[in-house]
Image (cartoon, rainbow, N blue to C red):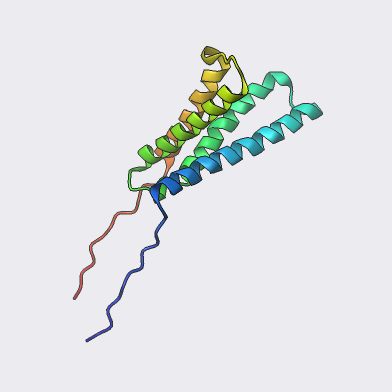
Length: 140
């Protein structure tokens, strides 16, 4: 009787923990970028007119990074996983906005910011790597 090979699967943790890790990563990237943008605007390196377009790109990039980090660790496809993380990140940004300001112009800058967060997640889902296909092993 030969030694049987056993495959050890690496668990990626509970599904909620994987999604939370992606949302927290998005929030950390967004907060660090926002702090850097604030410092650059205070120093005069970035004009105020260019601050909002940079913030939009930063929001999309933060959603992209968080969504890409969880694409391979969920049982769904890459588009569903990435969009779910981006949607959770968008809800978190929405809650931060509602708690921080009394009136937000959703048709203007507020809605555009949330749209870029969702678009960053969609881009991660489209460009994300699919899960590897499981091949059946033959035992001889």
